[in-house]
Image 1 (cartoon, rainbow, N blue to C red):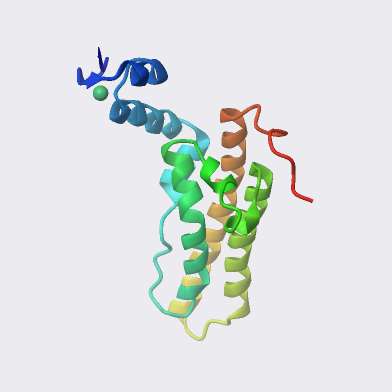
Image 2: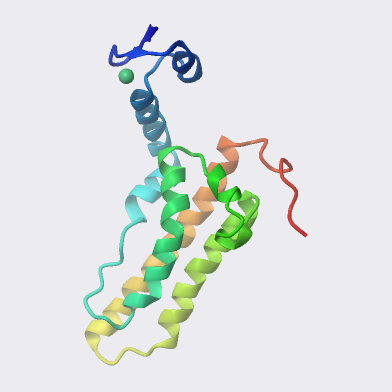
Length: 166
Ligand SMILES: [Zn+2]
């Protein structure tokens, strides 16, 4: 038995060895705090939220994208680990590496832009919703570019571990 260096809970020696002497909750809290300091973490905390729309016109445009992106982005923000994505051949269009995942995430965001652009607003409230959604799309584009840098900074040796599917 060992003791967590942060909160003094009893922890297994194996856990202590893996986490540098912290219990699992303290270890995850530390990772979340570290990621908060990155550009990706800051960007996620600022822009990853539902667009606040006042009409129904564009509501379904972003819903699917939000649903799809929530998992990988949340996992990245809270643990930096998205290996589960690459082990899910039936999801994320079968993305097997970070670049494929980035391309897939960008397509989700692009679909929101296309959906919003295809529907002309018929009043000021809808117009304002559409502008809101356009800002959301731009913010998400920025978030994804930070994600890419963040992921490779955290996993510098990732590329090449898996072969790109043919
Ligand atoms: Zn602890």
